[in-house]
Image (tube, rainbow, N blue to C red):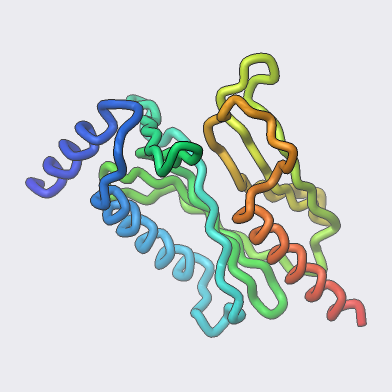
Length: 204
């Protein structure tokens, strides 16, 4: 109980201001919650590390309100004069794990303040069931944008659509010539390469 009170007190202080310097303690708290989510993913999917290929999983994070009584709190941490990192105290985590025949999907709500993971959803999709996929870029408001959003959607033959958020960040006021950053390019290149190779193997 004492540890939880101290944790909540730390978060209240850290997110009191919308901008400021980074604090390594936030990364410690966040990593603790991510480790819990990772274990729950394997447990709910009923798989072990041997069921996953050597490819590292893709992990995506986006702010999402879990506690109806408390909105997501943000903090912009300036890394340098041109780069800023957007931190938040509640999130939606999405994991993509690559098996030999299937794509494993895990999603859950995280509350870093309490070290809490809930609303877990898992799914297993055969590579052959993926009909197509779509990447989109948009602003939350076209006239007065605050956030930039990049999404990846998988369209399955049974009509389902599996949604992934690749970017949810503050709009810096400048429309970039190149839409994707280096991390997003790596994620999409990895996803496209693996899915294409798996589908090609099934069709041969």
